Length: 125
Image (cartoon, rainbow, N blue to C red):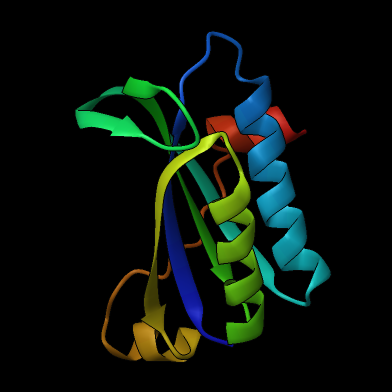
């Protein structure tokens, strides 16, 4: 299974309940499809580089988070469909890091496996 990294920008609301649910939904979708979630990382709330509009009003502030995971291309396609339909998501992109984890380790790059809990992972607990 290929190794992917997804960066997601969500609409900002003072309570992080909607981000928690979106992260949980995304990671559970990957795991229920036979994939592996390697890391969830929050980049926090940031001012957007430009105002963004999706499913309604213009936004100037967003919450950024990343998800590193192994999944099949079919799972990735269905995950993109979930993100496309979700009104909380402003933008997202998925990068393919490698076909196999061994490909990253052979190049001498750091494998994105984190033993420290991130803030979003703490929220999911």
